[in-house]
Amino acid sequence: MFTRFRSMPATAMAAVLGCALMATATPAAAQKKEKPKKEEAAKGKQLTASKGFAPALKKMTDANSAKDAAALQAALTEAQASASTPDDKYLVGFYQLQLGILGKDQALQGQGLDVMLESGLTPAENIGVYNFYSGNFAYGAKNYTKAIQRLEAAKAAGSTEAALAPMLMDSYLNAGQIDKGWEIAQAGIASARAAGTKPSEELFVRPAQAFQKANRTNEMLDVLTMRVQDYPTPATWRNTLYILLQQSGGDKELNLDILRLMRATNSMTQRPEYLEYAGLATEAGYPGEVVALIKHGQNSGAIPKTDAHFGGILESQTPRATADAAAVAADATKPATLSNPKAARATADALVGNGDAAKAIPLYQAALAASPTDAVIQYRLGVAQALAGQSDAAVASFAKVQGNRQRLAQLWTVRAKAGGAPAAAPAATPAS
Image (cartoon, rainbow, N blue to C red):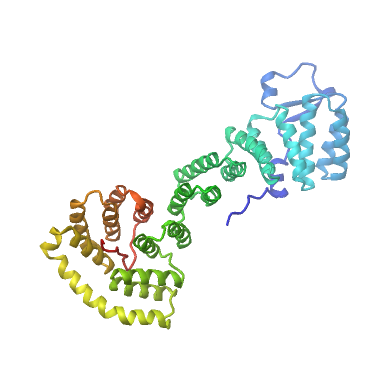
């Protein structure tokens, strides 16, 4: 579940923004008569307090040093009345920020930062961090338009804050600019991957939620497919594949292939999933796959070994699985099977269901040679290659899949690139 980014605590904020004034403020009366060079002023090396502002500046400085919030508030009130120059106003903003930090008042901190930023006097090295925190406060107040403005400015100034990309992304999403939000998320994902780190999961979750709310299911699935690359947990696989099940339109053959990928990614965790899978595989005539499925569920703890319903299925399907395995193994070696595309495909499907994925590959290739545009055979060839450990070949096969298994092929590609195969291989249903 998405958690809103929290504003930085006052203690942490003080460490970043409240340590010291980033420019030296000198009362006009104490300065030399010559004016500072423009370059130095631009760099923020020197601020000039006007003569009338000097007394209030001293009071603010002393109160802030003493961490006396009440005295600082009184001095600020006096300073706001006497501030007459841009430098004076910048200093007022700085001490507003300090008072906000002392009182843990984010609204006041934000006001101080805004005054400093809008003065044009903020030192170049501080523009990024000041804009970031101003955007952070605006985001916390749900002022997404301002948050976008400040966070974009922080980004342009070279801010490296880890929360910048997720916060900017979420600001765009909340402002209704979903495509821009996803663009920001993708850049953050690419940057993290390039640096060898794992992207924040929120860079996937929030855009997916926004696309779902906008009924843009295909884009949502694009995001979730990217998510499992970095978060290949059973939970993330399960969430993604359940959406595919909901989109399948009652296609039993497709549902079975989706459930097989759930099994391959160890994301089947509930008894109803095993019930549906066992029912579909039994109906399709794959007793070996049914037996392996139930044993998988028992070993994972999803199916109690005392479950009478599954016990009955095992009792009826086990002898059939033994006889079927022998017949399928015999058919796989016959030249007549390879020369008959329909028989080759059906035998390959059964071999994968029985855990003999490698033996199924030449049979699928023979069937595909006869029907080169058959997306289902192309898909199942990729699955067999992936389960046999032929990752590169599998990825190449999946890249050619079109139609309603294209998304499954993309997900299997993620699985193949990650390496490894399930202990009990999923299978495919025969051609009708």
